[in-house]
Length: 110
Length: 117
Image 1 (tube, rainbow over the protein chains, first blue to last red):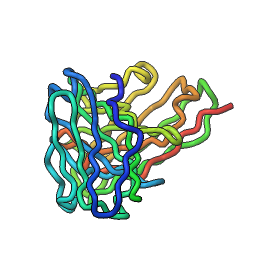
Image 2: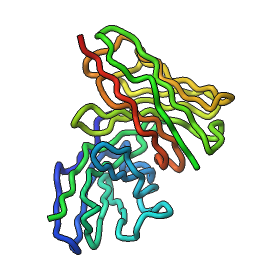
Image 3: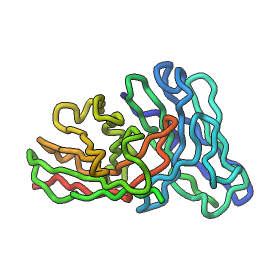
Image 4: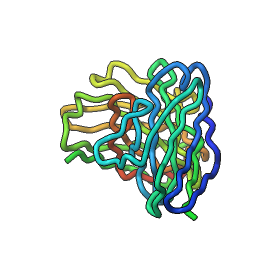
């Protein structure tokens, strides 16, 4: 049940794209397509941005997209906007009804 | 409108106990797995425990297994987390969340648990 590995920080200028990686193992990210991504602003509850690796909930802008290759999942935010500045966490099913979150990435809009 | 509202957070001494509650509204609690997630001050999210729709299956992260107990009362639209033998490292904001399609689309606002002497 080790946390998934994310880079501590990422940044980009408005309008640019930023991609956040989420590295797990063949027992979690690599095995299951239950990878989700969450955005969290300071003092707020997390918000679901991507589920089942690539799916976007209703209301989430199509600037947010997800993918997966092997044991690594990725979240890409295109056309960065000021309101995208937040912490982002991945989460993966790890079998036996256990889930694990990533270490988190702070995205800064320059 | 789906709403989850946690309560019960407080200051407690190491070794003490606390019971958190999560009141659900706007949906049928009995149709969903429910989960507790915590976040220590300035730290990341940590999955804590989840419980099946009918309460027949419960799963925990290793660090709380044997000390925490997740339960639910579908008739009262309520989820609970009984926390015993609390440690300083259990200090965190505790969120309840509704699971669907292997993800958490609805969260409460969180309740703060502080374990300190």
